[in-house]
Length: 227
Image 1 (cartoon, rainbow, N blue to C red):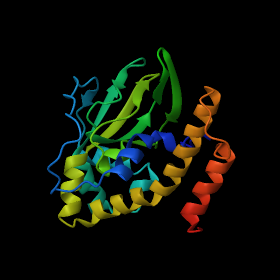
Image 2 (image 1 turned 135 degrees about the vertical axis):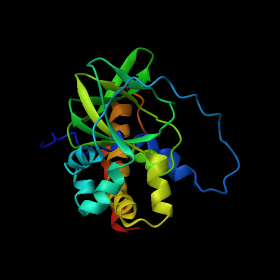
Image 3 (image 1 turned 120 degrees about the vertical axis):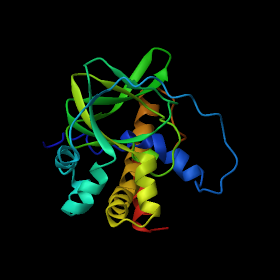
Image 4 (image 1 turned 90 degrees about the vertical axis):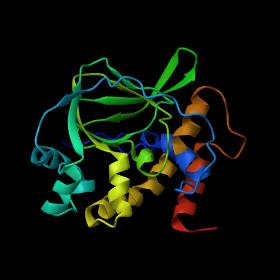
C-alpha cells in the first residue's frame, strides 16, 4: 500500500535519535541514566499464525525485501502478528521499547505532548511502515506515544532476538540492520526540521538564523559532507 506524504517524517523515529546520538550503547555499559519504567500491560492481542504468514507480511516492507526466503523465515520465527481496536493507546512516552513494529493494516499515530492537554501528531504509520527503529539501535524507551486510530494489525519483532542474531553474524539480521541504518540520516534531518516547525507553531521560537529553512539547510549540508 502506498504511503502518504507523511510516511517519511523523521519524528516517527525521533524517539530514538536524541538518545541514540547522545549515548553509546554496548554490553560494557554499567551506568543506567535513569530507572527503566516497568512494562505496561500488553494492549495488543496476539494472533496465532505460523512463521510463514509472518514472513509474508514482513515482505510487504522494503526493509525486508532484500532478504532471501530462508533469511526472511529466520526473522519471522521470532516475530508474531498482533492486533488492537481503534482508540487503543498502544504505548506512552517513557515505556520500554521492546519491539520493531511493522504496520500491516490500520493506522497508528505517533504523538508528542507540546503543552499540557495539547498533543501533536508527528507521524502517521500505515501498512508497510515501521515503528521502533530506535529500539533496534539501542534506545531503551519510547519518546513518543502511539495511538491506534482504527482497528490495526501489526507484526512485532522482539528487538533482543534481532540483536542476538545480528551479534551472531546471521546474514538476515545483518541485512535488516544495514537497511535500517541506511534511513537513519534522513530521519534525523526530517526530525530536526519538524521540531523547528513545532517550535515556531507554538511560538517557542528558535534563535534568529536557526529557523526551519536554516535548520534544513544545515542538516542537508551535514548529511552531504559539507562543512
